[in-house]
Length: 135
Picture 1 (spheres, helix red, strand yellow):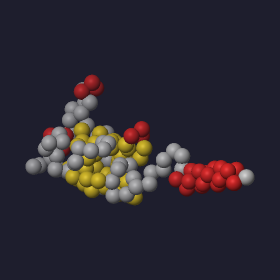
Picture 2 (tube, helix red, strand yellow; picture 1 turned 135 degrees about the vertical axis):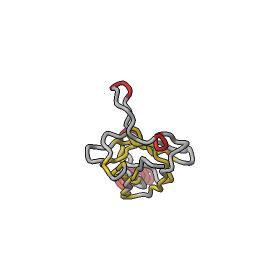
Picture 3 (cartoon, rainbow, N blue to C red; picture 1 turned 60 degrees about the horizontal axis):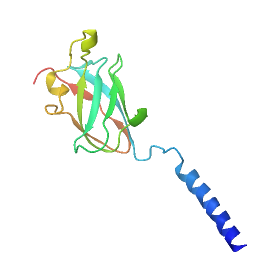
Picture 4 (cartoon, rainbow, N blue to C red; picture 1 turned 90 degrees about the horizontal axis):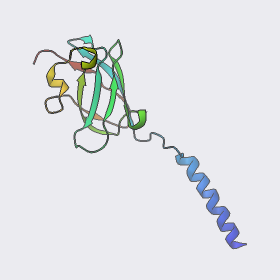
C-alpha cells in the first residue's frame, strides 16, 4: 500500500510540475523586440535586421522592416524575441539576385564596423534604430 501511495504522489507531482512550467517551453526570460528603422529620418523599407550577440555566444535574432520601417525580431524556429544580452546590429537592403542595390550605409552592413549596439532585457523592448548616411 505504501508503494502505491508513493507512486500516486509522484504522478501528481509530475503533473503539477508540467502544468506549472509547460511542456513546450514558454518564453520566460525572453526579450520581445520591436521598433522602427529610419535612414536620415525616413522609414527604411524592406531591410533585413540581424541582432548578433556581442560575446559570440547564443543565437542571432533576425527580422525585417515593413513599408513603415517597423520590425520585430525572431530567434530559433521563428520564436519572437531574443535571449537577454548585449547585441550588435547589422542591416541590409541589398538583394543581388533581384538587382536591388544596397540603401544602408556600409558601416551598418558589417559586424566589424557597425556601431549599433543594444542591450535586450527580458520583457518588452522597443528599439528604434536611427541610421544616418553621413559619417
